Length: 209
Figure (tube, rainbow, N blue to C red):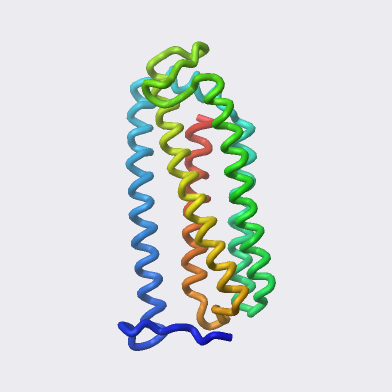
């Protein structure tokens, strides 16, 4: 089993792990600020075009959004179980749970792609490309513009999270983590939880409100 690497700038593993945690929480905070700005813009448009937003939400693809909510909530469980497994040095389970989480991320993207295809077919596209005759209002245009921006950005985070988990999966397979030293894996799973939490806010905003 390879020994955990200690960066030359750190005097001990505890200092290195503290720096990892601090850096990760700062990064997650910046991500939350990014989406908070989009949520604030959505709220402003919703205030200005309330009836149009309500009509657009009623016509939105509720089942696609609900299925994806279930997928991501389940993925939060499996990625948390990977941390549970590494703390008990059950490395095959670590790889298994990470791989299942990656598959769930892929399933989320498949469902989202099907949803995007439907919106594309309807003409519910962002900005000047919007031409859905069923809801021809400017407010509906603003709703779907925000919809595409927020869900597209979130989908990009899902892809990034899958790449990170794949790297952790490879490292876990080669025993780069131990019960005492797995902070990098733990911090990476926090990123996946962030992706899930953001979707928990997007789901009611875009499908239920």
